[in-house]
Image (cartoon, rainbow, N blue to C red; front, side):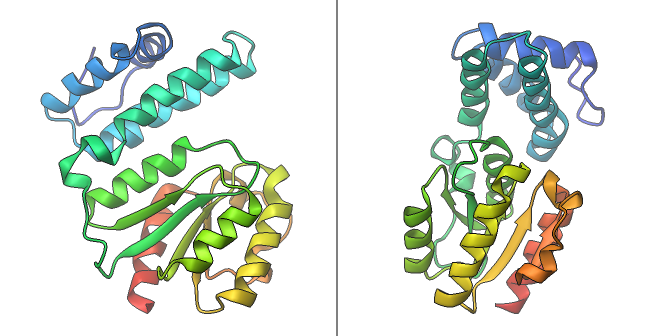
Length: 221
């Protein structure tokens, strides 16, 4: 496999990694990733140029009915395990740092890979990230309202989550009016309802935009 850190992976590389994460057991894909890191690929490139495209390819395979949903789910879990802060000493950040944020997906939205990847990359930059994944409406609001963190990043991946987004933000504006809210995800660029009317502080369609806005929000807290 081509592992030059200055290049994107080829289509053949991506297909090989998909195959390893799907059928290579718990360490099949992870062993290739470990090799890429040991050969000098920066973690940021690993996420944005390797794992991200592989996750998208896995999604396409399921949509094209080439792979069963369960197999894709297991493969994505194996990829997410690579980003687990419990196995990375460099991701153990200070809870008292000024750069703190909650990252959460909306109730009913099962897509978590992008959020886990964003948390991994921000932790590498010294952010303390509290992840709230797959929580129902009540639990999500309860955790956010109890937290002293002043920045919330909400991920929206499909139009079916738009109602949940409006409901969550509306409630938080009542109970935590000073909370800085950033909405990100592919739906942002195509949303029918202007997100600025919702009362969020920032919104971004790409990871790079969201990352820059997160830093800006940190300066305001």
